[in-house]
Each structure stands twice: as C-alpha cells, then as structure tokens.
Length: 179
Image (cartoon, rainbow, N blue to C red; front, side):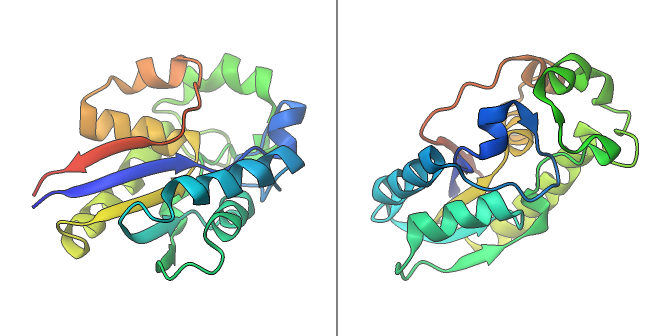
C-alpha cells in the first residue's frame, strides 16, 4: 500500500518578513508565524497522521511544537529535511537568492550545497519513510527546497523549472509514495 505524504513548510519567520534567505541558520517564527503554526495543528491534528518528520532547524521545530503540542503523534527530527545550505551566503538578502538560485542547481553554494544535493537527501528520506510507514499518512515539516525536491522526485517536475518559479505557499501539498 502507498504512503500518503503530506508536506508543509515551516511557518512564517522574522527573516521571511525581512526578506532574508535563512538557509541553515536557525530562524525564528514571527508573531504571524506562530499563528499559522497553530492553524497547521488545527488542520492536521486529527488528519489520520501516523508520524511527523520535521527538519532540525529551529523554525521548523518551533512550527511542529506549536502545531502539535500535547498531541500523541510521534515526532521524528531529521536533518535531511533541512533547507538548501547556502554556505557562506546563509542569511543573504532574498533578492540575491532569487537572482542566483539557478546557478546552484548542480554547483554548490560556496561552502554549502547544490539543489541536486537536496534532492539526493530527500530521496534517502523518502526511501526510509516508504520502508517504515507503509499504508500510512506521514507529515513532513520542512522548507521550500524540500518541496521542490518532492515535486521533482514524485511528480516528475523539472528541478530547474521548480526552483526558478516563485514560491506560492498553500496549506500543504499531498503526495503518494508507491511501493
């Protein structure tokens, strides 16, 4: 039976509001973000989720804790759900990220990683989840690069096309992992 994967991005951060590309820096939720994290919990708490996987970056962890505080759903912290590592440019202005993103499809950011490397670590996590959570609903809380990787791996979307497009937030994306 397939794994039904729900992907949610972390809630809005102070960096998001200030136009900063946080990358592997921790980040923290803004007041609006804390509200959207609670809304995530309201949307998903009784959604039949068997397990929650969350990035180990502070903004994703804070999202998960606010959304699912007191819930009995197991929470697995996994560094493979991290945002792309922009290396020496973690914390750069968002405009720079948008202008240079395509140049790092295969070429790592200086001191960081490429988007293809994000795809590889996402594939490794997908493989583990498919083995461990057959016929279950699994929630991932991560970052924009993880969603692009999922679209590429599970829907066949061209990776360059995904990372070049504007990020349009929505309340979750659903995928199916077939055995």
